[in-house]
Length: 534
Ligand code: NAD
Image (cartoon, rainbow, N blue to C red):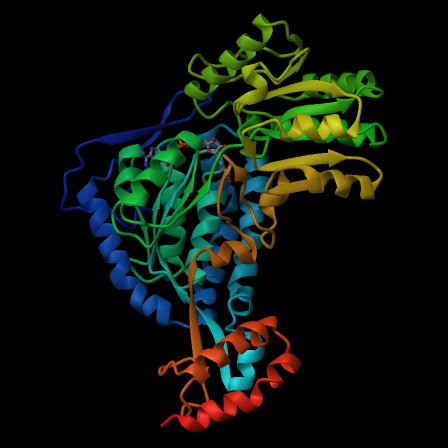
């Protein structure tokens, strides 16, 4: 399948000769899928200018009008689901079934949810300002658009990640400049095309294709916020560059997500979850199960079920029906996996399944077998760094404390999962784990729930996407404070007479307790001060 950017690009700036091109390739075959230009810093700046101009009228529309456009885009996605799933599969290597279940379905849900609910989620809020109300004051928060939001996205969920953020940003009244990954530019352009056909005004969503240099240009192009999803190393570079202009950033970074399986867990379900959590999208999810800790009493049974299931996975080209696991999205990522597995094996890990590049595919295909490792420990790269591939290393533990300690022994903290039939224990353990999301008896999937926040702690990132917390990242809280007793001079204004100084001390002792009763004791002094002022 060949595609060019011209039919879908919203931003193709025909006046510039694009000096460089990106060739998008199918990682299952190495074949070219299409070409797009690497947008220059000037082109990125112009895209931001166009977005800034378009935002004014977009931001002035009602939520209902903005939601109408998102719902029309949703209809197009629904109609073109097969074509979109195929494009995602061809650019990433993932099975078509997974493109539908893990990318398209969650975004269809997210689109309807935020199109209909953003108004309520961003409703102006009256604040309880305590005793200041007695002085005729009131405060409320109005949420205003930020302006232009820059979104820089990765290749592993090239549809769901940028599209979700685009929808939230648009519903909040912003214009967007999106820089999709250089590995999946055509999916990025497809997002732009869908919104254009849905009637989104020109300039409100600009797609700038390119590589890291284009992302770098966008970071410093004067946008009002950067929503970055990618690796820790790049996230750090983005934060450093953004710091120079004090551009706020949300960073959604890597993970090394642990799964803890207690001895009272449903072993069969937990084994199924471990295999899906580790091998879905060929393990290339930020929330993949990257470490599994199983209670020693059930370890033998659990591990043999995991191995059996891993070996039964059907690995093939993503567009073939029945494929469970496709190619990895790039040869580069496959080499990282080889390095981690090689290091583990050299230091004594046992390979119970996989452990090598899969054979029988075309020469350019980046296929790696689903791999299960035991005999690993926390000195090995495979237990410390993000592998981002189809590898499931397993360790045993004896006590709850040990499981928590092992789970927290990581620089990352994106998601974690705890398996037990005892929900109270599950929640107790969940509350001790350092991660943005901890699931009890679930793995990986909550990015797909539009209502729940997504984001990490430690090196997994800063800020949130999705849910109300994610929407709040995309607005400026505007505090409006009103004094209805405007005739009176505040007691704390000049002049600072000896009586005033005494009253201030009284306020410190009584008013600042938050107690109306205590404050009432100051009423005579306050009245005297009000009367003494002109
Ligand atoms: P990456 O960091 O290599 O690239 C991400 C994006 O940043 C790409 O669009 C890239 O072109 C751009 N970029 C590169 N250099 C840049 C620079 N100097 N300034 C601005 N932009 C730049 O990441 P990747 O390989 O595309 O994605 C894989 C990583 O993403 C993994 O670490 C994974 O865990 C993480 N990820 C995190 C989440 C999350 O929600 N936390 C979700 C998906 C992926």
